[in-house]
Every structure is written in C-alpha cells, then in structure tokens.
Length: 130
Image 1: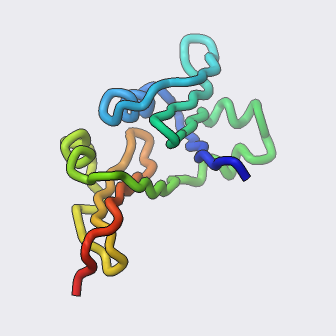
Image 2: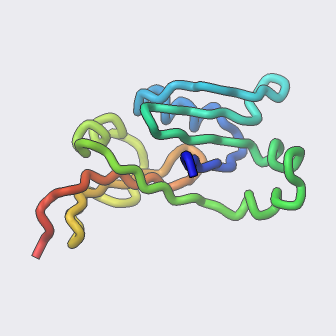
C-alpha cells in the first residue's frame, strides 16, 4: 500500500473546500467541474489528502453506491504536531469535541465541517491523565 485518502460525499463542495483551504492551509490539487459547480476535488497539505465528491457526482460515477454515500457523516481523525494552531484556526466552527486529554496520551479537539462531517484533531504524546 502507498497511501489512503478519505472521500467525503457532500451536497456541494465549495463551502467544504473553503473550510480546508482558508482555515487550514490546504491546496486544491485536482478538480472535476460539473457546470458552474465542482463535482469532485482533491485537497492536500503535506502528506494529508482529503477528497470531496458531490452526491450528484456519486450518482454518475457509481450508481450502485450512491445511496450509501448519502448515509454519512464521516469521522476523520487527523494527527497534528501541535493542537493549539488548529483550535485558533477553527474558531467559530461548530465544536463537537471540546479540547480534552485522553488516557492514551492524545490532546484532542473536534469540529464539524460545513457538510456535517466530523474532524478530530489530535496532538499525540501528551502525558496521560490519571
């Protein structure tokens, strides 16, 4: 295996793309337009890659899986060097997991992207509680 990247299915890509590019510094590396909108996009920062595809795109690309694509949301777990810059960058975004320390030594914080997918950011190596 060489890599793995999630594909998140959404009604519209543009608000989600802004979430990753404007707040978190990702770059758009590929896109597939569908009229005036995007049907698919790849966003990347370093070795981390996230893909978004519209429900309409899923219906065209693989109709047998289109219904399953609508069942979301997806949960992403993203390991980061330091958590604090992500907490600041995501100020005002819906928090689903307030900052916490885990028994396994991760400091975590989670938000919801504009499409309702949950993204947990984790700084590993913190001292366990307890």
